[in-house]
Length: 267
Image 1 (cartoon, rainbow, N blue to C red):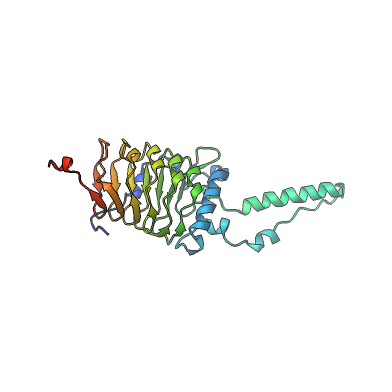
Image 2: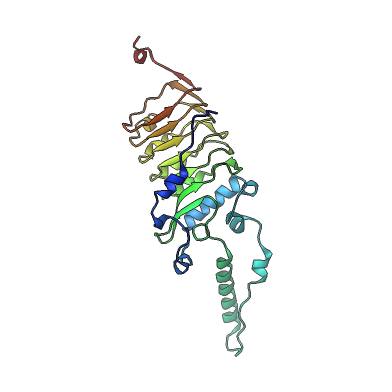
């Protein structure tokens, strides 16, 4: 691993967010109203299952929502009795069912309300949407789920320094607001998806120290907002990629199988 290559300063990224995107000590009345979009929760569930959440170093909130069922939750769910006995049997049954469902929903942890490990949200939206995922150096195993593209408000994702396998998720290209994507120091294989060329706001692309193969898609070379690209220590091939971004500050590509054309070498 390169000693002089550093990951993005995520604290600085988070500091740039407005208060609407974070969950520090918000007013209690407002915090209690925060509910995360169900679509985003389904993605988090897939992440927990496919990336073996039970093995993570830190998993505040995740375990409560997706871990083993808590029998106490069901045991403590009771329907208030009706003393006047006026309700019919069917009405009592309906009331019991509804009350049980409502109580159970309040017992479930919510990622945007309860400050889950690695999750930052845009709580200005109703329902709240996930803004950033940072699970770097957290003992992740397995594969990145294919439905990751449903996090359509995602701006930052870093899963670096874990033991992820499988391929880069093709559907991440649907996260068109994504600015920072970092999955270095894993065991990811396969090619870089062509769909990443749709990430027109991408600034930071860090894929180094994996097992990636194939060519760098030309669609990615044309992303105009890229400032940092780290592709080194893979098995990528073809002619050394040239990015067109005029704001590119840092680009590392060594320890691959790239070639340099004679024309570019001035021969």
